Image (cartoon, rainbow, N blue to C red; front, side):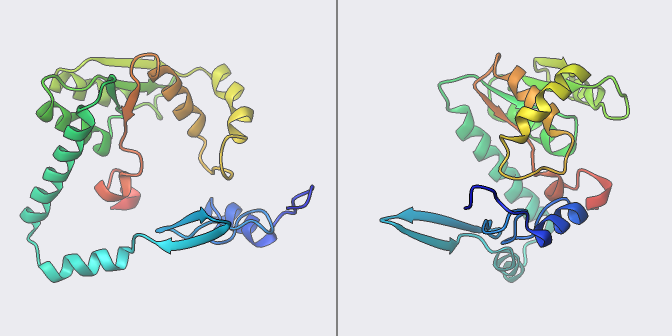
Length: 212
């Protein structure tokens, strides 16, 4: 790169329109990103890029097996249980970031099945009630009988982190919730060393109306 990176007009336009730049484009010229499902390995002065996952192949594989809806649910239940069991075999405290949504609630419920006691849960609350899901999280935590800690995000800490966090991201993030997420994990690390979350699960479990 030159000393003064140049803005890629195409990538920047995509970012403003979509909230992200389409691979391989980025907002900077001469900088490219890997497409989804690919990884890169640098070894012996050589860069090797290969595909490790193909959604179309996964869908085709599933259609060939003709699984029933119940079979799919059973397979999902087994996979989640096995994953949580593996995480439970740790030598450090484990917790769950609980938003009260479908995905994190599912993790919390399954943890109560695979562990002697459910993993402790942690939630970020906001003064603006339209953004707060703390009530739903508290109900779920009470239902499964787990320890539940709620943190409160204040405007001062929200804006204080914004500039610093912008330099810690690989690319600009079109999501104003990431300072809150960063503050949540900063608080959680005072209690546990590993925190499981349902991040990226909304598309799979249809956590919001836009995915349904």
